[in-house]
Length: 156
Image (cartoon, rainbow, N blue to C red; front, side, top):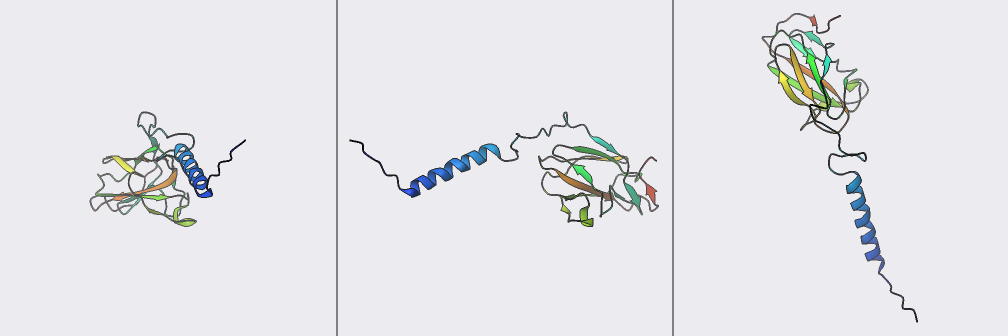
């Protein structure tokens, strides 16, 4: 004689949910993708040197508000040569998931470790995406002691 055991559907549903949740946490854990965590170390992410920003009236912008913004993959760094001729008194990083900024999307001030500043001097600003999320970045900087003339930060 065979005895059948009946398991209530609520227990089956709960166990199914727990197994599915554990699988998702394993695949998409905090700060990780299905392929694993990105390498955000400075040694594996040498800075991209960038000269193409502009300076107008003592204020630097790495790109126009309407883009194209700089692609900013997880762990990526930029060494932005600003052409201000002084150490900026203020600096802001703006983030967008669209390379056109407000030209075809939206933007917001970066938060947390989306854009960390590693160096600021009278020649360049070093920024890093210390997340594993891909985005676009716009960096602005300037100050009253940075002159008032229009300067192209590029070398062309």
